[in-house]
Image (cartoon, rainbow, N blue to C red):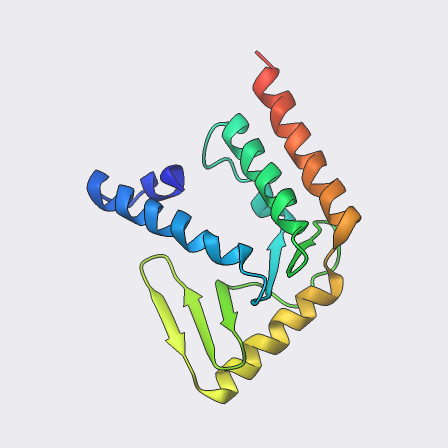
Length: 154
């Protein structure tokens, strides 16, 4: 997270430290078994080098670990397949009430039922082609191993 928030336009050091701490604290919700989470990530995002390959490999190990939580579903949309839609932005659905769309400079929220339904349908199209479980973990570990080999190369 520190590396991501250090990319242009970089946050000032103090703001970056507070933002990273808040994001780490927010991850505690993943361990609340009363809640459920569904994540979709496009494979190419796993390969983005926003930090050193070893740091990225650790993040992929964390992703595999989180995917094993019984109330967390992680799907990877593999590269090389025909996409069911064109992913324009990152977004998160919060139940069937709220969508948060991330842009380069801000987050946009909507509670309009038509908008929420549009994003839910988009999510479902990508979810239908994603890999889950052992297949997802195999893919993530393969990308991790590629990153580690890249780190080892002179």
